[in-house]
Length: 226
Image (cartoon, rainbow, N blue to C red):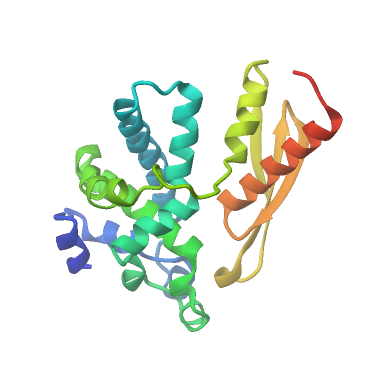
């Protein structure tokens, strides 16, 4: 972990935060310690902010919709895994014995979550400015912004459809099945408390995207007007 600090020119005041950021729930359960899930939550918000500010400053010609789509593309799971690979984050992860044996170190969702948790740990320990050391060294150089990947952000498309009529969207995790190394999440998306779609995935982000895709298909079939 000291090697990871040196890579990003960081010096954690609370070294425990860095360890927690790299601790998967399987290891936490086996060793009665904390997992990186809470840091993942705060890291997700911080990365959204950093990417939003970067795109806002870089693309003066973008409107709100353009900025939203580009941000989503660059903070999606596919992008997060690319960032994690750039700093070889998987080799620092703390995994439970079962997770380790089943190849958990190479699971994309696990690496993506850890990268967000790392951002969260730096923010909590050093503040927003220090998170730019990770953002500038890893995120900007390997971002998906200028690539032609067929990433479709169904959540943003759905949001665009409903926001003009001041509708509200809410995503709810309704099921979480399987062992820690092979989780499956089920998410439902509601519009003004009306169930619009349900989706499954190996991460919460994928499940939300799949539920949004189903909602869009339902709207297209019914030709609903807003």
